[in-house]
Amino acid sequence: MEDIIASVSSVLTDYVLVVSLLIVAIYFTFYTRGVQFRMIGEMCRLLAESGKKAPSGRGSQGSRSVSSFQAFAISIASRVGTGNLAGVATAIALGGPGSVMWMWIIALLGASSAFVESTLAQLFKVKGEGSFRGGPAYYIQKGIGKRWWAVLFAVLITLTFGFAFNSVQSNTIANAFDECFSFPREWMSLILSVATLAIVFGGIRSISRFSEIVVSVMAVAYIVLAIVIVALNIDRIPEVMLMIVENAFGVGQAAGGAIGMGVIMGVKRGLFSNEAGEGSTPNAAATADVSHPVKQGLIQTLGVYTDTLVICTATAFIILCSGMFLEGHDGIVLTQKAIDAELGGGHEYGSMFVSVAILFFAFTSIVANYYYGETNIRFIYDNDRIIGIYRLLVGVVVYLGGVMSLDLVWGFADITMALMTLCNLAAIIMLGRYAVVLLQDYTRQRKEGRNPVYESSLLPSISSETECWSKDCVD
Image 1 (spheres, rainbow, N blue to C red):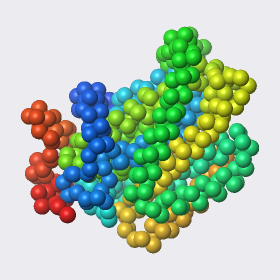
Image 2 (image 1 turned 120 degrees about the vertical axis):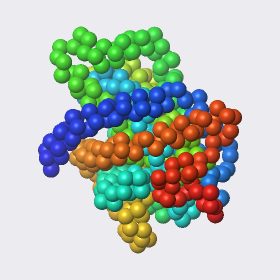
Image 3 (image 1 turned 90 degrees about the horizontal axis):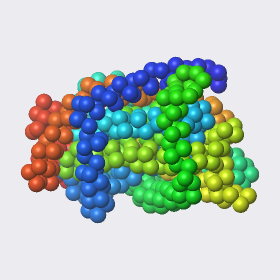
Image 4 (image 1 turned 90 degrees about the vertical axis):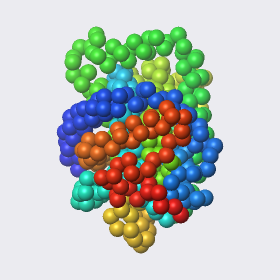
């Protein structure tokens, strides 16, 4: 099974997915006139503002609504996890230091795709019980009018996040604790499974509160640790940067194939971590209660930078400064060994910290991943009994992922991720014009000194499909 999965994954992710992601990212970078670069200041302003104010968008669900900042926290919870600590390590181990450069490139370009998909999710969102719902399945059906396509995406994202990615997260946690504390994988998997079930039965509000607090604290703690390690090796940073650039473009390498592997691993693991264009974060973006779709599109774009340019880069610098990537280690174990080497003293404090950090990062990802699946199952057929079965299955998969082999869980995750991403990329290419019109409207209102408010009359051809933006859409 591992051989079959590896063969399929190689074709889908190493060639089709990498090329498609880059083409679409470059296309939207030009189409939006580099929105991910020219509006960084506005992104930061909106995020700061959303953290202070209560939800007040059109069709507000009142105190039950998810704020713009909470929706951002949910998406960060899904992004910040295994990809940042284990995925980066795997990319460097297999693709060399140059893979870091390609992670940066796909993040900078792919942020435009993230803006488009999250803006579309807001445009076509619907009212749910206690909060809004939306995502690619919704904008495919409402914007393109293809129910089968929308259902296909809903199935793929449920398989990818609810099952495949969650098995990767639990596998990484189990490996980390086994390596550091010799804690049995079976027991850790069981604990994760029970904890997951306890959280997911609490609903989206409990997910947003849990993510908002835990992810923020752990991300800051991890970044502080990385800054300390980088500061201790400040004299080596020019050398590390040179190593990244030279390896990324094959300078001084024996074979050109090394460049290709660096591109492939950088893009693949970069996508797994920041999810730009993948079709996942729009599910969280749609839950936000805002006055204009572009607001959440910009905030979610900032999430790509937070994930890749800050947290992934921190991990990469730790590993490259330590030189442990030359010792044959891989995955989360490489990150643990690198931090131990940098802290010195013969202690394993680094391994302990990484074990605890990956527990919180990956567990919040499990919880957020579950929600993506629930949203899309409700899109296909909104039935509480089916959701209950799904929740139980997620608990089972979390346990199985912790005891399965690393290659099997990563291979399955790569395949489902590739299929889901290709499905979403085709959709946003067809619907991207709406996001551009909304961006122009938002920019115009900001220049007039107004707090942008969207009215469905701006896009009359689809006004009947944007039910949450009409003038009479109030609670």
